Length: 113
Image (tube, rainbow, N blue to C red; front, side):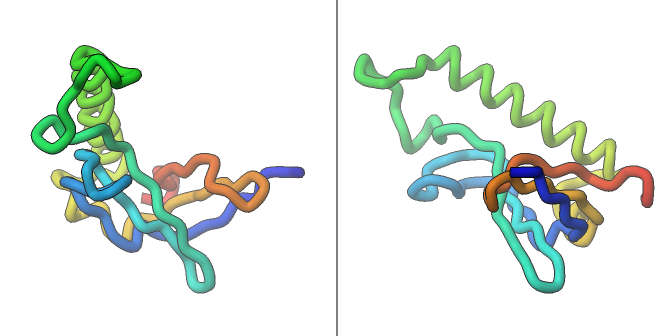
């Protein structure tokens, strides 16, 4: 099945807890157009809510690396959108790619800003 691309906007953005059981720290989005919408986030287990143990498939080092990736991701989004903080991302135009009806990827439409 061919990927499908749709144009839309960032409908809402939050930085904080969200994701699975609202226990993941990161940036969370609602993307959409006139007749469609999808959620996306870049997040990791919150260090205050979810403690690492021997039963986890990840380590504190893994969590730290993920936190670093999240902050670099936010920095790139702010740069691409030419805005100073995450609340200004709302309304920014995006291109969203779906494959088999599932979100595959999305990007800020830098060429129209």
